[in-house]
Length: 211
Image 1 (cartoon, rainbow, N blue to C red):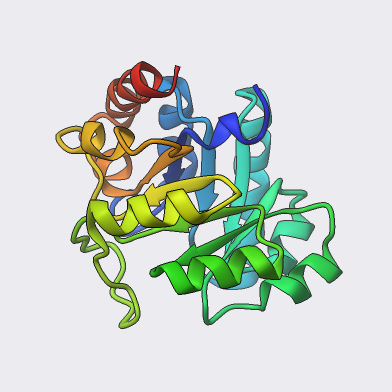
Image 2: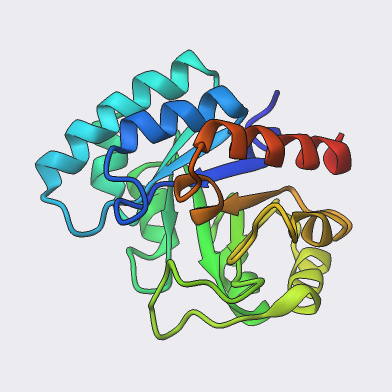
């Protein structure tokens, strides 16, 4: 499976939903997650690195990708596969210069931002929010809907991963978007009573549509 194919089921950590990232990520990987993003904004850098190293081992054991949210330095320190950068983070072009080997994802919320991120050198796009979500409170996050997602997928020449409010009930609608590379979820797995089973069910839906 190429790195692009490993974007199909992309699980993002959230300490508010699961306080033990390592335990929940391992469950998600057992269930079939193909990529994991460490999102740990409020913790000291030393703790992010400590958790990241544990997730690095797990993702290697399960042949999955590991991304770090926002932090190029942490991604380099733990030998992650990539980094996810938003519009308030290090510019993609600078991250590419500092860490040319990393897979860089750009978080975008409009067609204009998607075009700019691709031009700046992003390897893939995290596009949302497709549906309303409570896991991100940033003022610039807005709901673009399925139609907004479709327009970006049609315009982009790099893989697009949909994010924002995606769950077992609506994943099918998202995956019907022609050309989509995968879905990213937070609460649908990290907030599930059984993260392993939630990931397994989502993976079955993803594989049905993406082959």
